[in-house]
Amino acid sequence: MRICFFSIVNYYQGVQGGMEIHGKLLTEGLVKHGHHVTVLSTRHPEGKTFEKKEGVEYYYLNNTVFGSSRNRWRQESADKFVQMHIDNPFDVVLSQSFAAFSLMSEIKKYNINIDVIPILQGCIRQRLGSALNHLYKASGHPIQVLRSFASLCYWYFIVERPLLSASKRVITASNELVDDLRRWHGVAIANKAVPVFNGIDTEWFRPDKELKTGLRSKYDIKDNEILLLTLGTINREKGHHLAVEALSHLRKTNPNLRLMIVGTGEYQPQIKKMVWKAGLKNDVIFPGSAQNHETVSYYNGADIFLMPTLRVEGLPFVLLEAMSCGLPIIASRIGGNTSLVKDGKNGFLVEPGNVEEISKKVLMLAEQRRVFKEISSSARKTILQEFSVDTMVDGTIGLIQTLIS
Image (tube, rainbow, N blue to C red; front, side, top):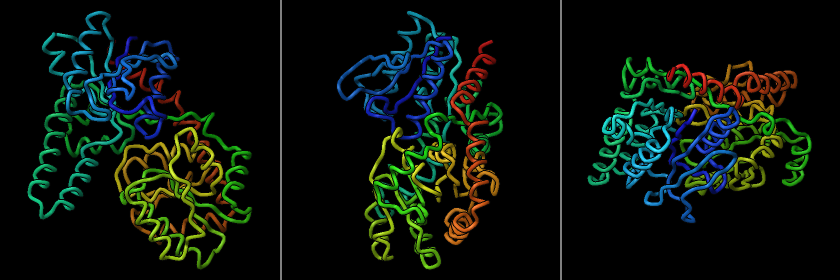
């Protein structure tokens, strides 16, 4: 099959976020299965218009802005697709999130018969939450309020709704996103949705004693110390501050606990101030940001992974990666986390924002070695059986073949 993959994210400066990870793994996986994959993306910082990596062809549109679906992306991406399709027709279009929203009017205009399949990691609920947050911050500034509201309307009525309505099938990263579609777009669109869970490279993200020893030696973490880990962009929605609060409570009963917060972000100064006020300056480590291929060292060096997020997400890659490395995890009972974590079996779920629950689960894992080992083993087994790259790629191929046949 010839597949065109629409994406506005960064594939040239080192893989960072979940969207980049997903796009890279999926497109390269499709190529390994013998398919021809072309990626249309936003401009390259060095002005490149084309390159080929791991068998995937990347076309960068110079008149667009990196990471933005506005400005010239709408017309440039549609024009490029039509030009390439006329020269050598594609069999299907995959749209990472809503990157191909501009295509529907063009294929109708040129009478092109092709299926466009959006792959959703999140939905309007996430965007609505962010928009309401911006509205709250902008209260008292009418122009900013109006802009935030206009942005939300633009996204819903111009971007999401038309693409979802015109598509015959929609891929979602979790079961919870199907419910989200039903809630915000209706039963007809939700019935098009097929969950294909995100997958990761389980050979790269695996338990490794050497990496564990190296990381703990680097940061002077003793053998009897239990290292808690959070990893990701540091903003309030991610809940890093809740991990700090939990550590503050737990240190009173278990002085061998420490916390490592990997990442950077706008909320980092507040987190550091919070750490200092709680007297945890020597117990919380801030290594800075890490590229995706480097994170395996942090997972292996830690003992327990915390994801106390307050934000609804599709299926976070950090949870998949941590579990694949055999880390027991404690995550918020929210969004796609519940598609992955079976409470008490391969990890623990807590109510979003509940520091007391987080603390209790950490204490249980720290004190009950049998429970720790069972959860660790089950976590790794879950990823191997259900969330590998091959499973994700096979699921995507199966859906495409069913649709175009």
